[in-house]
Every structure is written in C-alpha cells, then in structure tokens.
Amino acid sequence: MQILNDTLFLADVIAIAVMMHIIARCIADDSEKRRQKRRDEGYQRHKARLKKERIMGENRIELWRRYAR
Image 1 (spheres, rainbow, N blue to C red):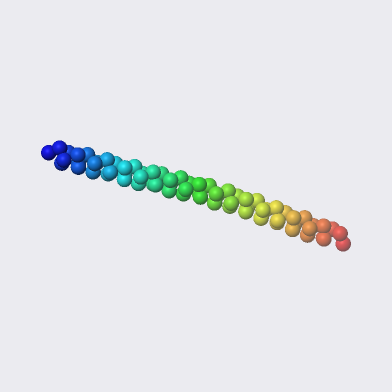
Image 2: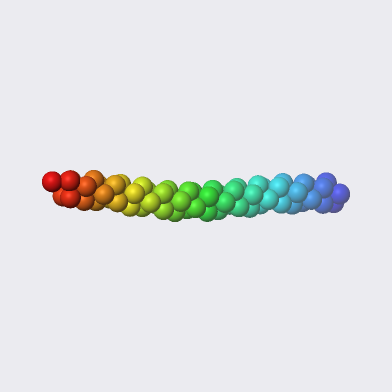
C-alpha cells in the first residue's frame, strides 16, 4: 500500500510541475504578444509622424518654388 501511495504522490508532483511549466509558458507567450503589439503600435505612430514630416517638407518646397518665380 505504501508503494501505491508513493507512486501516486510522485505522479501528483510530476503533474503539478508540468502544469506549472505550461502556465509559465502561457504567461510568457501572452507577455510576448503584448510586447509585440506595443512595438507595432509605436512603429505605426513613428511611421505616421515621418510621413507627416515628409509631406510638410514637400509642401514647403513647393510653396518656395511657386513664390520664388
């Protein structure tokens, strides 16, 4: 009977360790997804700002060309 109890206890310990590992991986994956989403949002804001600056520069050059004549 003691061998059976020891075996069940060991199986429980192994199952708990496996579950904890799976939970830790899920948390890490979720964290990575959130980090990637923040990076993408920051990249899109940066890209929009660069586009706005480029358009403003082009417009400024065009205005100088029109009034320089």
